[in-house]
Image (cartoon, rainbow, N blue to C red):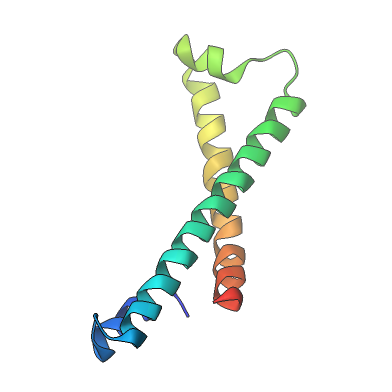
Length: 96
C-alpha cells in the first residue's frame, strides 16, 4: 500500500480509530524507510562517482563555482533517484 493509500484508508475509517492510527503509523514507517533507503543509495552512488573520478574533488570544484561538476553530480543524484524509486516503493509496500 502506498503512502497516499495508507492516509486515504485512515481518513475513510476515521483518523482517531484504531485502524486509522495503524494506517497512519504504517504510512510513517513507510516514509521513514523510503527516506533512509534513498539517502543510502544516493550516498553510495556519490562515493562510486568519487572513486571513478580520481584527482577531482567534486565538492571543492563546486565551491569554486564549477557548474559542469555541479551538473554532473546533479545528474547522478537524479538518475539514482529515478532508478531506485520503484525499488523503494516495492520494498516498503512488501514490508507494510
